[in-house]
Amino acid sequence: MRLVRSILLKGDIMSNSKNINSARNLTTSIVGQALRALPVSVNCYYGDPTLQWGDTMEKLERLAETGHTGPVSIITKGAIGPQRAADLARLVLPGLVVMVSVSGLGRAFEEVGHAHRYTTLRNLREAGVKAFAAVRPLTPPYNTSREVLTEIFQNLQAAGCEVACVSGFRGDASLIEEMSPEEGTEWVLRVKQMTGFDLVMECARENGIRLFTRVNCAVSYLTGRPSPFNPYWGSPQLVRCDAIECPLRGTCGPTEPNPEILAWLRQVGYDLEYQPAPQKACSFSSDTRLNCKSCCTTCYVERQPRVVVRNARTLGDLTFCRFVLGGTLCVKPGMIDEGGLDVGHVKVLQEAVGGANLHCLNSWWPWSAQLEKCFGCRYCILHHYTDRSSVGCAPADLEHMLQR
Image 1 (tube, helix red, strand yellow):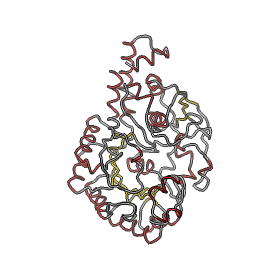
Image 2 (cartoon, helix red, strand yellow):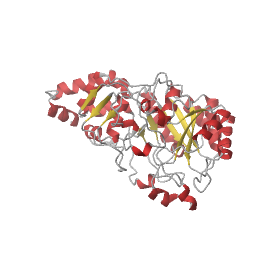
Image 3 (tube, helix red, strand yellow):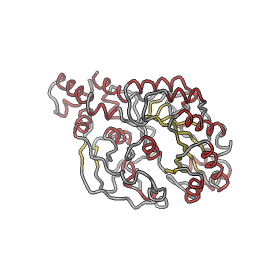
Image 4 (cartoon, one colour):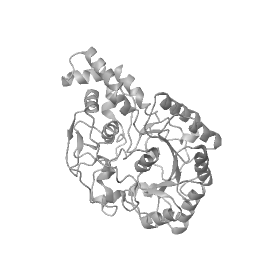
């Protein structure tokens, strides 16, 4: 068993049987609760969840069976009719949230239409399923005019949608050259760029839509969490916490790690240490964001209360540790997103469970089957990822995988 070998090498536990008992005792208590609280996305890789509805429901039902308490997201551009909405409503998943992508972009960017997306939001509201609109990608000048933004937010209001999250285009020059129309030179290339944000905020407020700039914050608000799993409290200017009057401002802040979970992560194979420090706020804004190479959610630049994971091999490792610790900032000094195809792989954990394909994105633990086709959006980057293997599992099943 890889877990046993890694622990024996560290000298933490001196026998296989003692190690197995220790792991079992931990995972059925505090750690078990932490695993069941992870933010999970279902079928969000290549192939919209509505295009594989049977598999999507099977995964959601498995999460319900394991007593999952954390956020569970379906991210879709597809259609969810009254029956599908009813199917979701009957699930015992307190953290279930449907995120409906809405962009207002024409068919030069998205082949799939828009009207059914507003209908989906209406159906979910009527069924009592928590949902919000992901207004993205905001792509100047194609969907950032007052006319287009007003139409989007008016349609959201008419559908009974009260919450939206907005974000900008993400990519580099080579990606733009590959997928943009002739006006590609007009594109604004910035990480989470929010050109014209004041207009976006104005259109949202005129139509009674509560606005967020980060998915994790919107999900936390809808599911009743006091703060997101991502440490956005460290970059309030970039996230625009005050400008959007985020309702989590009074409760969002550093999370002190639970010692039992730290011990479990060491048993899994992570070499880590908690380093307490006063809370600080980063001064970067969207205008200066590119001056810092560190990812905000794994920030090693500002000296914040954090867990240093010395042997993390990817950002996926850092994200997994952060999720299990309930949102504690986890860093490895110097580690940044360099565009590698394995950036989201949770490599230390994968080895501990015998090579299972486990990933962590910035906001989600993805559990996903992958299809051979999707909606064919021009800005999609997943064709760069040729591996169509299934990814993830119900987080609670990690307990059994680690005990084998």
